[in-house]
Length: 635
Image (cartoon, rainbow, N blue to C red):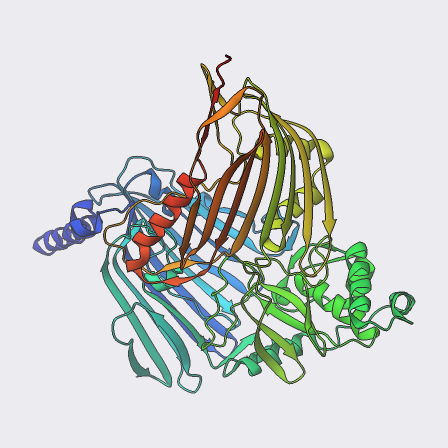
């Protein structure tokens, strides 16, 4: 009986201890500041068990403080032929840390991994949420995953968002001693603990008491702000293919091997290549003709099947089926050029808004996209092969100004893609307008957009019907009330593409009429909306990525019988962030407005933030300067 009582007491103590573990009262107060979710603990273990096999284990608990942290109340993992989920468990705890329930196998949803964006994908997701709303509460999830392949080593970023604080987190990586782990760390104090373990090396990273972060405008990449570790083993395997991360050249050799002998075209396509290019002497013209042919005869479908995430379908497959993903279409275009005697290079890149994404000193699979590079004697032509409308030679903002891995028979080489700056990203606008005595404005607006300034509009006009485009225009302009009477577009397809837009519109009550005065804002369209909050203690560097140049010239014919009562003075601003000038003149019965704004990119120290706030504030106010007209007194 005494033994039984001891067991009962011990069992109760264990339950009580576990209950107290997730009690909200155990969270240090410093971790609650600015947080909407607290990662209570995380334990990750990644172990390479064989040259082509690995295990990934994760146990993590989140305390959801309010509805802004709800996304961490759900948990999912994907699986496919190279990745199987062995364990998926979870529990829900209330604010006191008491377990409310554990998930059952029947609670786990098993859904397709297809994201609906024209993807053919053999991945599936196991997904669960407790759908609990009595805040605060805690969820705990535990998964174990078997991996076939060691191409990817997991990145460790314990703090997943600005609104998350971290109480405790640990990652352990076990790799064979003869296959060294290379890693790059950000914001980690010291070095990982490394020890030997039966022919393996064991690496341990730990963090504790990481506070939530107050977001700052134009901050650096997340990896530079919080603790993060990126890693790769020297040797890896993907399915039955082996490769090396010792250098970018080595990784390029692996990619070249995946693509080898996949550039064979059907006889009919080979014949068409010669019909299009034989007799043409200019290489760029040949490239353009074959690129146009590729665009007219294929379309993009994302395909993620087995090793298909890295290995393209062959050129014959694309020719016969008329579709492919970025890899397959780039490989198909390479085959077309090869048939015409033109050398081109398959290129890996990451398409996103961060042009500084690549860790150049950590060769590894850091890419999500493929394009094509055509080297010429004097310059280089880049081809984005997934678009049916983009002109040859233009890769867009998502691919521009960044490192890419160019692959040939000797391996991989890092190169920079084209940079689109102030000169290329141009918006030049001219407006002829007439204002009546009631404040109503009629205007013809002629705008030329180039490079990245035309990216959004290019997508809109190539994917919308005329009626939908009219609806878009009627909702898109920065005017209180207006109506589009007519519009016209002309695309100039070149390596720096241009879209010329003409709009005829009416804006009722554009100017404010009060008694005998009219208040007019001469800047009709191109007004900056950026006003920044003052930050007394800016912590991080300022990173401005986008360069552009806006040029505006406007003529507004004024109603008869009015003279100027107040005219804004000229504005001129020059700083390291850009240049801005604006002026207004009255000539006869017409008001002339000129504006030129050059916005620069760059990285600036935190102590420059006050200057940036002032820069944007000056432009914001100048863009809204008004002319005041008063009715002339009749004698």
